[in-house]
Length: 235
Image 1 (cartoon, rainbow, N blue to C red):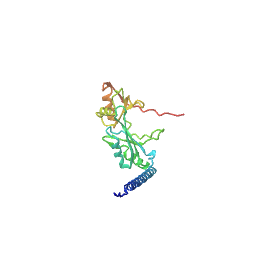
Image 2 (image 1 turned 135 degrees about the vertical axis):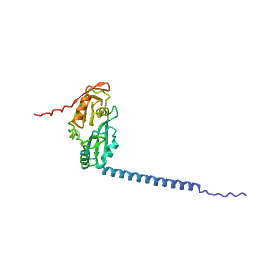
Image 3 (image 1 turned 90 degrees about the vertical axis):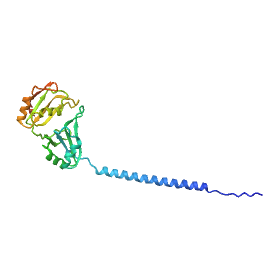
Image 4 (image 1 turned 180 degrees about the horizontal axis):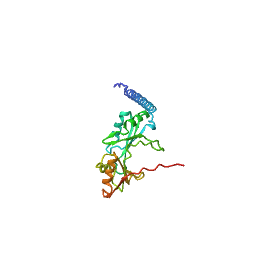
């Protein structure tokens, strides 16, 4: 007679226990991830709550910049007066060359006022900066101009002449305080004339005498003393 012995395997039970353990671990990981995400969101909300936009009055206009000055150099220059929130040099859309001015936004109005006092008339490579509070949108800007009495009108400019080229030509006849080609606001293209400010009356007269009627990039330019615009009278 043959005897059969029946053995009961515990494999199904082990499989079940392993599955339950894996499910528990997955739930624990999911809970940990959810907690981490909640903490990150809370930190982000806290940071957003503590950050505030700098006041509009903390924005500064910076004119007569050297043409090799970029936004990074501008920020470094003004960082000595406080925290620079934004620094931006304005470029011509067609030529991608600096237009010789930009804007700096400081962290506070007090720092902006300090920067204006420190850098208006500041000499960089022979150029005197024009620095003043940027006018709020929709208002007329306050202008604090440096050495405007020796201003020259330059007409009949070739279209490719930019600020740098204009400055280069007049530098041969004295110290140039400012050189500016006038561009159309809508198209960004030169309007064919500009203004140059010299450091002294003698240099202004020398430049006019030497350059009036001379050829610049194929066109005979007109050079004379810039006329002051008459102030408007309101009745």
